[in-house]
Image (cartoon, rainbow, N blue to C red):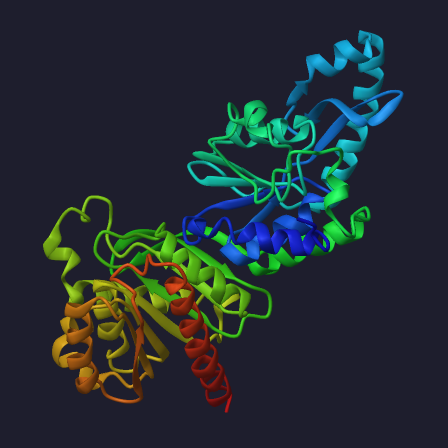
Length: 434
């Protein structure tokens, strides 16, 4: 197998990692060559992209041969076998390490541009490079992300020697590689174009990834006082945002829902802000009566909408609601409030029927998205559709179950939501400006 270039390799590698879509994973690249590969993976998974700056410690008389590696957090990995065969002295090692440490600090500062690392605590982390040879840099990266709190470490590369698992499976929970040839001399032999990735390209890709994730605007943890109750959330407003979508989570879900976070990331890429927040406190969540209480949840959503609309970064932005499961009923309940300025509503596998008589008072264009295999909920949505006021539409995703866990189905939900919100929030922005 020969890859055209690192972009081609990244696309093929991403095809091996689809199960991590919607799993709240972080893609971590090894600069420089690993960044174009990882960027394709991050785009395909809808995941944030970060870097783990590693410097290979090359043998003094053969720099391309790694005798170890160092990382940002003081990580240091040495290949004893290479050092013995090359007869490296402590003095030689110290000189190489000193030079590489200075270069590591320079590159880390240049690439990050003052941006803090993406939080890894409790999340799956996919470490990506353009290939593995000796494995020293990959080993150091796996140890660094583990030290930063990664819950599950995946090392993913387009090409590696056939015996790579024997060297690296102790530091990664999972290894992914589409091609492990029996004869392996160097990573570059498996690329038609293996030109060195310039710093400017790394910076461009990282800046674009930060913008997709809201880094080009504002993103922050927040606490809302909705209907007298303090509720935690995360507000992300990309630079130049054209609207704001509030997520109403359903039963058994929260602002950490990987499915809703995936949809939110796609909305950010389309230039829309999002607020993911919990409608119930931690103490209230076990109470099933509250989970299925649309008036309570709808009132809190409406209150949170008014509060967030007063924030400077959200001022003047048209508002939409994205509701999942029982959260869909809350979204429609709030949208039916007298005087509510809600420009669009999308329901994912929702229970709009729970909004009952309020459905007729909803004037916001409403899209109901249901899985084709979710027979009971599909029937309830068809009934609710007839009772909705204003523009409404039902979209059925073939073969999808209630949670849209089947390959490609969540991507369809995100695409439908982006199209619906982009169209209707954009129109509302024009109308409200008049």
